Structure formats: structure tokens, C-alpha cells
Image 1: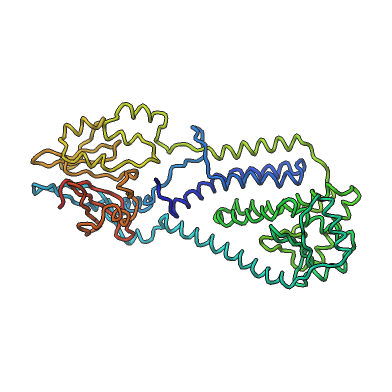
Image 2: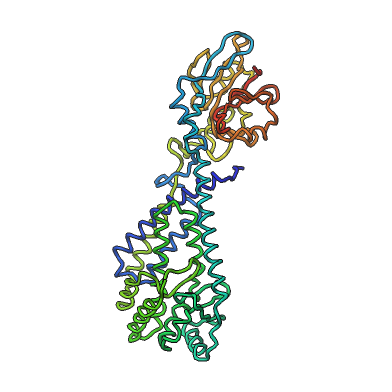
Amino acid sequence: MAKINLITIFKGVVLLSMMGTLPAIGILLFKGILKDRLSARLQYYIWFLLILRLIIPFTIESPFHFFTNEPVPEHAIISAQLLESSNDKTTVKKNPGNDTAHTFSVPLPDFNKVSSVFTPEHFASIWLIVMIGIYIYIMLVNAVFVLRLRQCIPCTQPEIHTIVNRCKNKLHITGKVTILSGSRIKSPMVWGIFHPRIIIPGNMIPGLTQEELSYILLHELAHVKRKDLCIHIITMVIQGIYWFNPVIWYSMYRMKEDCELSCDASVLSILAEEEYKKYGLTILSVMKKANDPQPVPGTAGFAVRKNKRRIIMITQYKKTSAKWAVITLLCLILLTGCSSLSGSAPGTNPQNTTETENDSKDGPDSATSSSDTEAISFETYFDLLGSSKQDLINGISEKPESVDEGGLEFKETGIRVWFNTDTGIVNQIFTQREDLDFKGAKIGDKTESFQNAFGKPVSDKNSDMHFKYENGYISVIYDTQTGITYAVYLLSEDF
């Protein structure tokens, strides 16, 4: 089973972020092109396609895809840096039983350069820290708001209760909604998911007519009925998770604006046409009286800073054609679906996997045709130690290439093999394959993973950690700066 850690989660978030960017841009373009043909409510509801894309971690395998779900190796950045900086540095392994030595170009770390490279752990940690910081800020703001809310008093005037009941009947709301008045509240708003409270500034109530107060209450009650506060919380969570993607951040901001327009449309749908203008004038009147219309995170307000679109929508409110609504939804659903398509990583051929497995069931190279998501036991290669050269070539259905000191390289299998010069049997196997399972540890993990798998090493020096395993040894090559492993030798004898 694959280990779930911070880096794995971060890679999934980045992939979903890329998949969500495409439908987000598509929604913004469609809204800009068809803004006069789409109803205010539809302009809000189409954002739900983006939310679904960002919170549902699924992809559809397809030969035509925008993204690949092949994970990036955790040590890829470090390995690339090492290859560039240390081509002339090699580790040396001696063949037991003779005085000769062969070399293999496994680059040793250049600590000056490695220390300046941002590893996936760094990026994942920064992402987590900023995300937690955003959520802490939101909680602190709401904690301060709760303290201000305690200073609010219930509105007990009979005429206000009459207006509230009338508005609830129009919207078919049966649940309890508390009306509060507060001197420190700057603009009307609704707060609370399970026990909704509508808060109206205390200095504003005396200057409102009953008609204006009913419009304000209708708007806030519409938020309650539509469960907009729940959606606001979801958008805040999404903004926190995808804080590094400006397209998603801006899309969530636009969604909140469209929420207010959609709420206005819901109110207008139950008002007479001659009341549209009065409703718009009420918005302007509240704007003049509100000192700071910036909403508190987690609340839904009545007046926001940008009201030009709202006034235009209210004055031009009319039922729109369903044709454009259907066309827009179909196009955006198609776009969102396309962004969910993924395929195998470049260079793989999933269609030939079965054939390859059938052709070479018994050879160790059959492991290379396995799914990338399925770990292969290192014992498949460890068992090759002690084999003769001819048995090795017969067992691996791949033509090898000669390397230094009489060794053989099987490129497709991903190993290099050397032989004892006296007996001619395999005594060293080198690999950098990332899909090998060393009893739960993998190349790219830190050395602690191999210590957990094989216990205390018999030796550990010069970035080379040796473990005793059965009748042989496992030599793990790692970066002493970060502790990340990048190669493994399988040895018949320790030296």
C-alpha cells in the first residue's frame, strides 16, 4: 500500500489545481461573453462545477488527456542537480575475491548546490504553513466577530416580528431565525449555519421604513433558505487549500459576488415588477449608511463594495432564455470533463501491458511491465545473486549492453550487473528503480525507511549504508545532506 504523507497530498492538490484552472478560465470567459444572456442565478450556479472539480479527486483514463497523473519522484530535483554538478565523481565497488575494482557513475552529492535546491518537502511544508495561517486568520476574525455579536440585543419590537413573519411566509421558511441589533455592526448580514441570526446595525433601524426593512430581511432570509453560508465556508476552505493558484482564488472571489446577485434575483422573483426599483434604491440607501460594507469571512451581507453590477441586474431584471442556459451548461460540463482526463506517463503503453506480462512471466524483466502504481519486490532482483552469466541472460528477455569491468546493463529492466572474476557468478546488482519495494522502503525515501525495514545497518560511512539481508547485503547510497536515498546495490558479499 502506498504511503500517504504530506508530499503525496501536496502533489494531489497541485494536480487538482491544474485540473481546476481550465474550467475556471472557461467559466470566466463564458460569463464575459454571455453575461447578458445568462440569468444571475445561473451565473452563480455554474461555479459549482468548479467546486466539484476541486474537491473530487478523480481522473478518467483516456488516450487524449490534458494532464498526467504520474507522480514526480521525490528525489528528482536532487538527482538532476547531482547529475549536472558531479559527472566526474563516482563511487567505487570492489569485486570480492580479486584486487580489481570497477567504477560506476553514481554522482556524489555537491553539498553547496544541494543545500540551495528546494525539494518537494520544502514546497509541501510552505503550502501547509500558509494554508494553516489562512485558516487561523479566518478563525481569529470570526472569534472577534462572536465577541461583537454578544453585545447585540434581540429585536423585540412587534412591528419587526410582523415583517419577519411576512417575509418568511413569502420565502416558505419555517425554521427559527433570530433578528439582532448591534451598534458595532456596520452593515446588515446573516451569520450562523445551524442557528441563523440576522444582524442589523442599531443606528440604521430607526431610519428605515417598513418597506425598506422588509427588503433587507427578504435578502438575508434568502441567504438562509439557499444555504449560502455553507457554500461560503466551502469556498473559504478551497481558497485556503489552493492559495497558490491566483485563478482559483479570483474565481472564488467572483463566486461570492455572483452569490449576492443570485440572492437579489431570488428576492426579485417574488416581488412585483413595480418593486424592483424600490429594492435597488434600498441597496443604495444601505450603502450610504454602512461605514464598512466589507463582509466578515463566514457571513453573508446585504451591501458590498461593488454594487454597480447589482443595480444593473435589478433594473434590467427579466427572465432569460433557457436555450443559452442549456448551451452554457453543456459547454462547461464538457470542459470540466476534459480537464478530468488523464493518461499514463509519457513512454508507457498500458495497452501492451498484458502482452508483455504473458511473454515474460518468469523473467525478472516482467516486473517492468507492471502498473507504475504497484510496487515490485526487490527480492525479484536479489534472487539473481549467484546466477551464472548465461542463466541471467536467459532469464531476462532483453539484450544487455556491456559496461565497465565486464558488467552488463539491462536498460529496460533498470539494473546493472557485475560478476565475480573467479567464479563468473553475479555478485553485484545496481539499480535506481523507484518502484522497487524494499519491505516498505523505496528509493527516494530517507534512510530511516530502510532502517525501519532492515534494522540497524552493519556499516554507515561515506553516504553508503550497508544492511545484512539473508545470505547477502543491501548497500543504500544516499545524500548525507538530506538523507534521501537515490541508488541501491545488492551484494553477495560485504566489503
